[in-house]
Length: 291
Image (cartoon, rainbow, N blue to C red; front, top):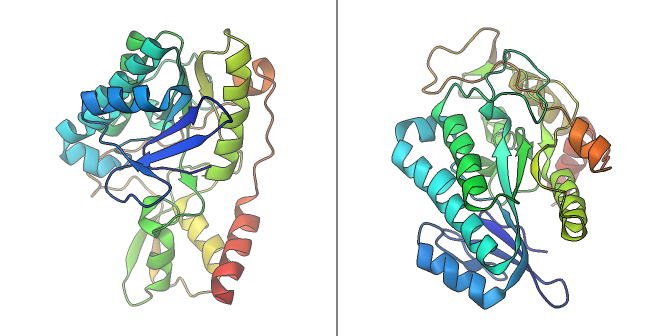
C-alpha cells in the first residue's frame, strides 16, 4: 500500500493500491494534478478503481485563511470533481474531512451534530463535504481530528512538527496549552478506512458521515512534554505554555471539537483500540536515536 498526500486508489483485479501525489512524487506514487479535471478523468479511466479515498487537502488553517481561493480549489472544487468521476465509473468514494467543521463549544460531536466552522479551513472542508455529496450521494464523509505518524518531513503533521520546535532550545516559543486535542495515529485511521471500505463494497447502506477519533485528551504543550520525554528527556524550558485563546493566530480554532465514534462503532461494528500516544512516540524516538 502506498500512502499519498492526495488520493488513494484501490484498483480492480488483485487489490492493487495506487497512491498519488503532486509536488513530491517518487515511485511507487503516481503524479496527479487534482486541480485539473481532465487529468482526474484520464487517471480514473486508466486505473478503473473500485474505491477511492481522497486524502488531498489544504489542511493548514492559517494558510487557508490567507489563501482562500487556493484552499477552495483543493478542498472543495477538486474533491467534487473526484467524487463526480467516481460516480461516473461506479467507484466507492471517501472524502477525508475534519473536526474543524465544528465550533468546539458542545463536544463530543455526533455525525448528525450541526456543523458550525469558525475558520475558513473548516468552512472549506464543510463545503467540500457538500460538494462531494452533491456530486455523488453515496459517498462517505470521514471526519478525523489532528493526525500524527510516520512522515517524510516533520512539517507534514501538526503534531510531528513539534519535534524540531522542541529540539531548537535556542528559540523561545509560546506553545498552546489551551485548545483540547485528540491526536490520532494515521495507522489507526488507515485501519478504520480499510475496514469501512471493505464493508461498504458489500453493503450499500454504508454511506454518509462517519467520525473516527482517538480518546486521549491533551494539548499541544502536553504533547511536547510527551515527545521530549520520549527523546531522552529533552529540555522544554524554552516553551512557554499559553493557557488562553491565542491572539496572534490568523485563524480561530475550536476549543474542543472532540468527535464521537458512536456511528462507526455501533452501526458499522468497527472498534479500533488506538495506539497510546506516549507508547507510539517512545518507539518512534527509540528507532530514530538508533539510526
